[in-house]
Image 1 (cartoon, rainbow, N blue to C red):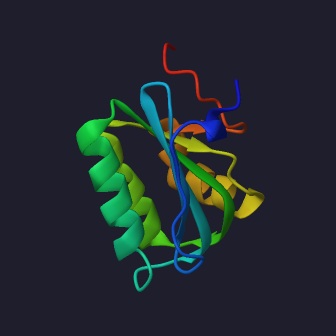
Image 2: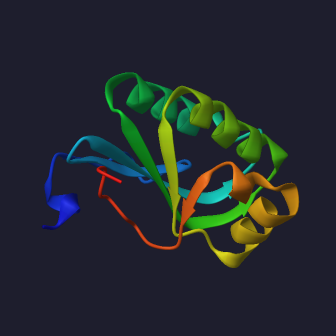
Length: 118
């Protein structure tokens, strides 16, 4: 099943949030670009809204080119309120997660695994 065919909600081509869609019980949000303190509010809003109505939130970060400590802090805060999965991080983000130990706390996956039963 192509998860992207379920309830896609494309947003404007601007900002850090790309498309969002339902995939079973999960809500998938795509993030993109350089994510730092100045650009995070729309992503924080999307993650908070998704966590209020879905048991699992999958954040597709394959389009993220940079993430700073504010981005990492956002992920850790959201992780505390919902089952957050970080999908397809590029090497820069994987390194950020490794050196901070966040990869031991966050559910980081190299693929866009939408299955919610595990």
